[in-house]
Every structure is written in structure tokens, then in C-alpha cells.
Image 1 (tube, helix red, strand yellow):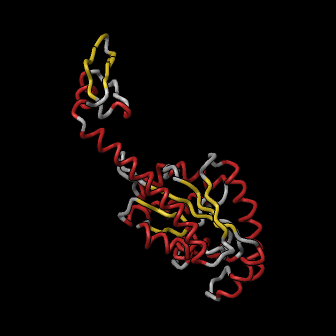
Image 2: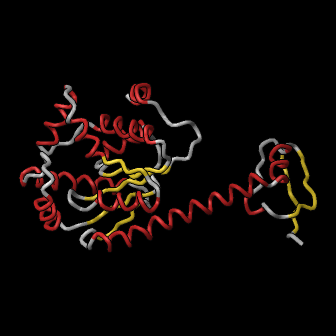
Image 3: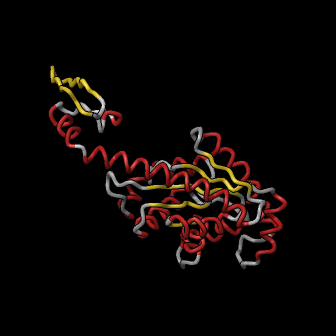
Length: 258
């Protein structure tokens, strides 16, 4: 299935650094608002699984009709289809930083994502909000969506609560970033900004180390002469007294600068 989807849609070039953040929360939690703010502040591309599916539901095709009926009934769309739509949108965007909004919602979704796209998310941003507040927001937003009726809303609550926690139980430790979605949108974004500012700092630090390593002629020489033996990042910037090459193993006797 994964190969078939990639042959139809395409894939990212090998070695290209792609940043993905999953944004999850119940219906009405404010995912769209916060993603819009993140796009403006941090240059991400926002991809909403729900928006992609709603657009697909408008198409006059058998697949579009199936998606429309499932969404109206509050049921989940097959994960392979969602992943296919996501990958297509990612490739068409031309960006390398993505907010994936409303996906994955369960273990089956996560496995489909890993099988087809396979880009490890930096973290999961979870916008937590009480059920009563979510219901109030949805019933008052009046967007004319087929899935914004009380029966469907409650089915979506049941699905999202159980499946979100199933997903979180399988995520690696340290990958979850939770904010209080019951606050005002501006207050929520203050918390979100702090999280993404930290991500930017980590990325910049990584770029700095990579740049120093690549621009260091000693490191390039040692890497070449030693048949792949790598000089550690901590050694970059130090003056070597002598480099011994013996049986394909490099031993560096180093002294500090100056």
C-alpha cells in the first residue's frame, strides 16, 4: 500500500530535513486558530486532515461520496486515504516545516503515517479543553459544516477522547506538549509560542554545530584518512598535537586552543 501511494503521489528527496509537528485536540479546541498563528510566527505550512477530507468530500467521485457519508455519520475515514491526501499536500506546498492538524487520532492512523510518510514528528502539540466547553464552542461557531450537529458532535467526542489517549500511550516519552485550550486564544498562543521558540532554538544550535563540523578542515581530513572514523563534535575547534593512524583506527592526542 505504501509503495502504491508513493508511486501515485511522490516522496521527499532522500536526506532532506523535514520538520513535522502533530497538532491534536477535540473538535472545537481551537486547533485551526493556533495553527494559523504558528504559520504567521514560525513559517510552518498548516495541513488540516479535516479540511483535506472536506475538500475531497466535495468532489463528484465515488471516493468523495464515501468520505462525505463517513464524516456526516461521525465515523473515521480509512487512514491510508488521509495519509495519501497529506503527503500530496506536503509535496505541493514546497515547504519543509509542517503542522499536521487532527491526525493521527489512533494507533492505526499512526502506523499508516509511519508506513507511507515515515517522518518522525518533533512533538505532539495537544490542545486540551473540557468537553462542555468544546460542545458550547461548536454549537455557536455556525460554520455550516455537515458534522456540526449535536449527535455527530457527541460521537466525535467519544472517538477523539478514547483514541487520542490511545495514541499518547504509544508515543515516545517527551514527545507530548500540552496546553490549556480553555484559555482565550491569545493566552493559549503565549504558551504555544514558548514551545515553538524552544524548537527553533534547538534547530539553530544543531545548524551551528553542523556548520562548524563541515567547515573544519582538520575534521574533513581525519574523516578521509581514517576510513570513516569520525572526530567527535566536542573535539571540533581543538588543536591536535598528533594524529596516529594504526590498523584503520585514529587516535588523537589533543591539547586545548592556545
